[in-house]
Image 1 (cartoon, rainbow, N blue to C red):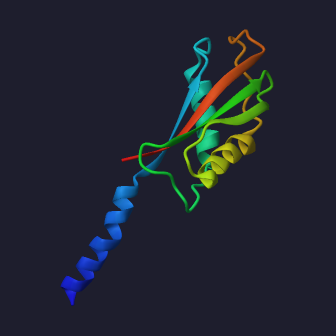
Image 2: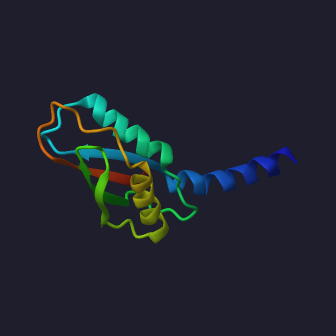
Length: 124
C-alpha cells in the first residue's frame, strides 16, 4: 500500500516539476538609478500577480510594457511579447494595471515618464 501511494505521489509530482515555476522580473530605463523605487514597483506587482490555471511552457514569457507618469500612475500598458497562453498574458497585464498607482517617481529622476518592462515567465 505504501508503495502505491509513493508511486502515485511521484506521478503527480513529475508534471508539476516539469511545468516549472512562475518568475517576475522588472526592467527599468537605465536613467532610473533608485533601487528602492525599483523594489517598491516590483513588490506591488508581485503582490497582485495571480497565476492562472493555464501556464505556458518552461522558457516562455509574457512581457508587459508600461509607461509610468511622475505621479506613479500607469499611463499605458500593453503586452509586447506573448507567452502563447492568453490567460497568462491577461493575468500579467492585469497585475500591472491593478498595481497603479505606484509611488511617485523619485525626485532625483528628472524625466516626465518612466518605462518599465515586466517579464512574467515560467522557469525550471
